[in-house]
Image (cartoon, rainbow, N blue to C red):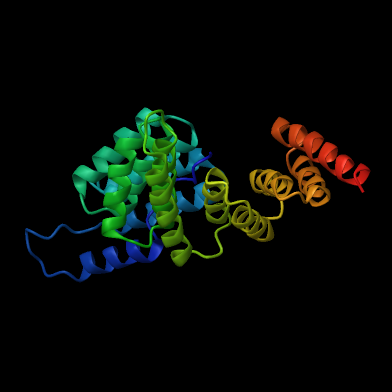
Length: 270
């Protein structure tokens, strides 16, 4: 399953940090945030949103030129590294951000995502739990924690039932935070599928598709759930939509053949 993209610090949080630093009394124990550092970090995230990691990287580096110990800039460089697929560099940047500020929830969340992408679900779980301890509403962290738990539940020798139950609970918490998150409905439906709760899975996949009509994994899941419910004609439609959304996804093509055979058999049996 693909993991959600790395999350950056929310802009209001950055603005609050800037205001607090500028309004703090002159005291050697209170670090002062250079306003240009904050400005460059904001600029860096805008470049990322525009699909320009090179400009983003320069902006974050420029922020560090004003403040070499600015954790937000290190977090931004980690996001750039992750976009480029450089997990070791992303981890290095995130670890430094956390040395600079241990109570940085987004950096813990991003480190957890990077660890999960690298295959270390157990270490990822620890980082993601720390992110959620600091900010229970971090949606990406919650979803990645659920995926880490799901991955561990499916590992050989694991307590599958307990792992699936734990993943389900995190996904339900996630939907409290972000009820319109299509990928959360997809993941909850996947857990339902693994527990053979096909009616619940069909509802979850369908909701995901309502929120994101060209979501191929949700369309594929919906197709399979409908076949399990003997609603083969509807399954054919779902799998055909899956192929339209992702023509190269072989799983959709295979399931479409199965759904079509199921529908043909149902018609012949009438």
